[in-house]
Structure formats: structure tokens, C-alpha cells
Image 1 (cartoon, rainbow, N blue to C red):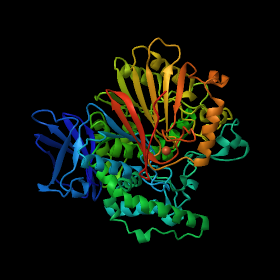
Image 2: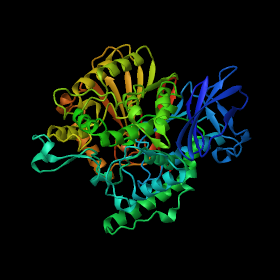
Image 3: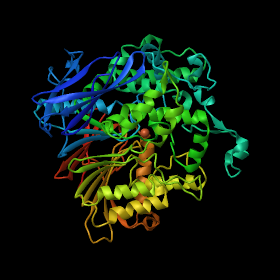
Length: 605
Ligand SMILES: [Fe+2]
């Protein structure tokens, strides 16, 4: 896997790359003195994950301008022409005064839409050809992989890659899966742990229908990832065109007798092939822009920590817990370590290395450290300041009813957020789920929740938990929080632009809720049109229903696209967003679609 530029600051730039052997790795920046510190993690007989921290030795690296870089492997210059926009060397920018940012979420390799990361690459190429800096950073706010929604052909490719790279096995793999992978395709959910119906609450409908409760609640869990090596292989296949050279694509075939599965397999394969063709541009994009990320549920599994009951059930069962920790470990390796440039995340390296004994992972001593790791969230000292929230591992449980959705962050984390916002004029805040979502959709979720089925419709919104919602809104209503906060969110598979102001406050704080989802995923288009209209009808500014929402003290304005004839506010068309700022304030909000088209929101009140 070619170098990816990860956290980039004036004193240090962190790269991550994967090589098939141990070697000396050194990066050089044009006209800058530096030294490279390397951390290597062996993941297989022929798979080594490298983190290269390039430290400025003389003066800090220049910010907000392009710096060309080269890579030496064992003292020999690596050929980086496939990463370069000028046929010579790739270049990176260390962001400080943010003027333009890419943001997106939800990238499903076999979704039928085109990959918007490819459009992002074309956009940067054109900027650089015109001598423009272009976006300084790429933020991905969740579902960078879909561990619980894997295509059949992808699962076969994963098996080939794990074999080819000799990725290490887990010692504790006790699920009774069929030996033949073909027999596992689209059927893994049958072998994943379940709570027998007799042990379910008598308040659940499932008890009376004598239905066992699956721990992994994804509707598409037929190919759910299980072992760490599978998660590792999915990351590599999602980000690197080079590893696909190791896959014999003629062997990506379904040989079972289920006709429905056969047709589904071929459908997925068609879209996966397009994804693979587009991957060389993803590779080039990652080589030229600092990329920071945050997990959402699908990076690990659907509904991850959604309710206290989910946690109680899944973490008590060793096999279920193992799968979750494998997802978290892979997240740490491929996303987390680069997010903070190994600052806090380094503490897991030693226990992780100790878990490997004779080419097999023995997780006993690593389970606690990874499960309890406390610093997935992070900030970046840019202007505006970047604050990235972990909304999955520090949830505010509903102590009275374990089936109620947990708040997305607990009290301590909300206080930490408050202190991060205070005394800053402008802040760019990444919250994987929108803070100000679509009221009609949240109302529908609330109905399912009231019927005891929060897992059915993913009640993952901030307003679903009384305490967390109240505290968060109180923070935004404070006079000393930023005069403008730009919230970047994803998760929902449609994009929108809302502006929010406190109704009765004396100060003039403005919040922008910019939601971009998905990079390669979409919400059913007809349904989103219907929900959009429903939201407009039910929650018009004068509608009394507004009094029943938790944010009635905030006035929310919806913005449509500039060229919109239909006054549609919710856009379901795969895209990455481009956020343009001037002096920390939002100037332009655009969507660059997978198709290459660009649309722009009208920001006027
Ligand atoms: Fe998603």
C-alpha cells in the first residue's frame, strides 16, 4: 500500500504505508531538513504496516503550501510517479489556516454509485495544474469500511489476500463456520452468536415469536467479518489498487446452488470491478492530502454500542466481544494511529506486539487495553480549530431503561467538548451523526423506539437521548462558545445544509450543520424525496410540532441547492463535500458527486 499522508503539523508529518518486507524507510521533503522515525507493526509473514514520522529538525515545516516529498526504501528512491500530479513527485500541504476542506463519510465498495474519492482526486489534480492549493485536508467521518456489509466477491478476495500475505490468525476462533468459504457466503449470520429466545426479555416481541436475538444486527450480516486478518485485508483492498494485483479475479465466482445468491454475487461483482478500476485515483489522493478519520458503527459493526442492552449482551459473549475487538484493533491500526500521529494511540503498540506468539494472535493481554482505550477523539490546532468527536465508545447509557438509545457522548465527554469550544471564535466540529438532523426522520425513529425496536431503524441521533441533547444544546447556547461553529457529519446517506441560531439568546452564535453522506453510498432516492416533503410540511416554521422537538429553542433554516427547481433539501447522490471558508466562516458548501458533477448549496437566509 502506497504512502498515505496522515496527521500533518508544522513540527511533524505522519505517513502510513504497507510493505511486504522489513526495510529501512526514509522520507525527504523538498528544501526542508528532517529526520524520519519509523514504527513497524508486523501483521503477516509478508505484511508490515509502517508509520513514518517525519520530524522537522531545523525550522518548522512551511504550512498552507505544497511540499514535494520523496521516499527512500533501503536507501533507494521509490518510484512515486503513480502518486504524483506532475509526473515527478507527490506533494502534501500542512494545514494551518483552513480555507478549503474535503469531508465525506460512508464508502461502500459494492454500492452502485461511483466512488467520490475518485472525483476528489480529479478536483485536486485540476487545482494543482492551475497552481491552486485546493483542499488542505480530507476528513472522513465514519464508515470508511463496512465490516458488516461485505460483498460476496469481496469476501473471496479477502480470503485470497490473507493467504497471499500470510496474515496472522487469531488463536481464539471458535465459531463453527463451514470449512468451505463458498458455503459461508451470505450465510455467516447463521453462525454468529445469538441470544436464545428463552433468555430474551418477556417485553420483547421476539420472546413470544420464539425468535433468537442475533448479536450482530446488520440486515446484511451474511458476510460479516470475523477475524482480525479479514478486517486488515478489507482495509488494504479498500484503499490500495496494488493489492488487487495479488488477487486472481477469475476465481471470484459463486459456485453455490442458491440462485438468488448467485445473481446477487454477480451484481456486486459488477460494481466492485468499477470500484477497483477507480482505486488508483484514491491511492493518489491519499498520497497528496493529509487525511484524518473517525469511526462510525460500520467500521466495527452495525449498531455498535447503540443501547446499554446491546453492550451488555454482546460484551458478555466471548466470541461476539472478540469480533468487536478485532474491528477496533483494525480501526486502531489503519485509522487511529495516523489520526493522532501515534501520540496517545502509541500506548497500544507494546501490548499489541506482545499478543503475537509464533505467528498467531493471543489476545488475552490486549483485549482490555484496546477495549478501554480512551483517546480515539482528537483535535488539530488549525484556524479554525478542528475538533473530532468519538460518539461511539463513551456513550451516555440510559440507566432507567437499557433498551433506550444511549446518548452519543457521556457527561464527561460533553464537558470536554465544552472546554474545547470555549474561547474560540470559530470551530470546525466533526460529529459522525448530525447534531441537527431531519426532524421528520427523527420522529419516525422515535416511534420505532417507543415500540421497543431502536435497533431496527438505528436511532443514532443526538436528540434521541434527553440528557445528552440538553447538555449539547446548552453548550451551543453559551455566549462564550464560537460565533460560528461548522459541524461536519455523515452517517445518513443523504446530504444537507442547515443553519442554526439560538432563538432567545443575546449573542449571535451561528451553527452550520453540513452533512455529507455517502462517498459511495446513497439513500433510496424516491423515499428521500418523500421524507423531504414530509419534513417541510410537518415542520414548517409556524408548525406547532416544532414545540415538541428538543431543539425548539433553536431556529433551524434549511438550505437548498442553488440550481434546485424542486426546493429539495435532502440530496441523495454519492458525493464528497467541499467546504470553503474565509477567516473561519463558511463561504461556500459544495458537493462533488461520484459522477464528477458539482452542486452548490445556497447559503443565503
Ligand atoms: Fe453509512
